Length: 372
Image (spheres, rainbow, N blue to C red):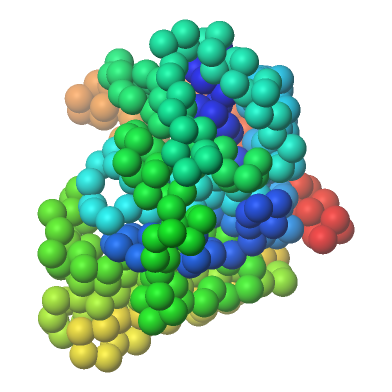
């Protein structure tokens, strides 16, 4: 990260926090900050994540890694912002479905503009600055893997980092924030209210008119998407609504959901914790529309995952051992008893590592409940 600009560091910190974990108070998605011509929007509420027991557990475990802590300290040194506490939310949107394109609004606290600019100029001497409607817009050459690309950023009112790959998109985003350009209307599906405790929101419209990136056939045969996940008190939830291109597609999505429930029940039906979790999965269709909802208590989810790990160890070890032996030798040889003994020892070692990891997960979850 030493070769990246400070605001790129901030973006990396956002991604890291998502893997674990406003103008000061970002909270839920704010439709007034999204351009009226947006086709999709994604919002991550880091405040909600930090307040949830599941988020606290993941964040605590993630930040125990030396590499992650070092990355956080680098961001703090370069920007004055501590990503562990000062990232409040991130909103991404675009008026088209195109890879590596769109606008990001990153809501932060305690960012040191002077320190950030000093680091930017040090790491990128070619960076240039233009002024637009009283806002400074900075551009420089960034690198993703082996590919260089232009990065454009502005700091809005000291608390929102506006980023894109080109100046016109940042200008448009600043116009929306300043009220010079229209934001999403209240009637837009992208502007619907969110449930309390929602951590991640993803919505899209006019999908049938676009050449969507990726290979998800369901999305490629849908017109509209609304997806939300989070934790409300101790209830974990996920909600996905699709308007598809036909009644048949909607019914197929519901059938897949029902099939998943049946498959889990067939494999883990004797485990009450697992069944309580899977019983919260429901689907409903209405013509071309299909809604898939899931809810479960956090404690039940932890117990269910633990039970599934134990089930895998008891019933999957033999299958795994034979699969690995055939992978190594191509077929079974007589006299492979030594190999089977070695495999047994390897399985036991793997089992102890998994159990130790799971015990640590449960301890972190219990601690997060006490902190709630």
